[in-house]
Image (cartoon, rainbow, N blue to C red; front, side):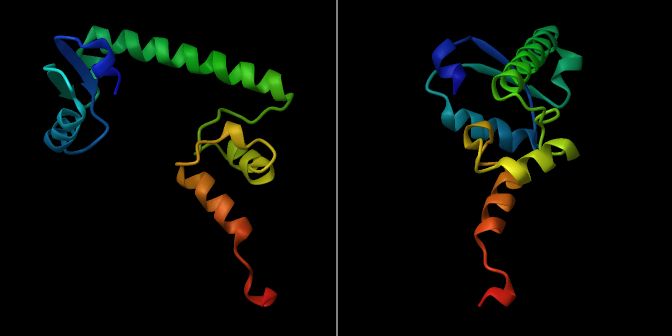
Amino acid sequence: IILNELQPDKAFIDCPSNNITAFGNYIKTKLKTKTELHLAHKADELYPTVSAASIIAKVTRDAKIAELKQKIGEDFGSGYPSDPFTKKFLEKNYAKYPELFRKSWASYKNVASGKKQKKLGEY
């Protein structure tokens, strides 16, 4: 994890889990250094450093999405798996642009495995 590379004394983390304690313990198992962890839901509302990191991440992501759209010459929506436009693009193009999709996302796995499965009438 990036904390091992940066080796900060403190880290402020927006917790994606409902169980902050369990998530904190999970992060601790990945740490190779002593880092004081501050975890919270909606940490961007509590800590200015998390707010700033969130803005930087969003701007960087938006720029990368625009770059990818220009590179392939197609609009695929926001790139989020919940976006209906992105879902349609994924269904049509998962094999054509495999480098664009996170293979770990359920939406990709569903489309990719669904294309491989035989339909009942195909047996």
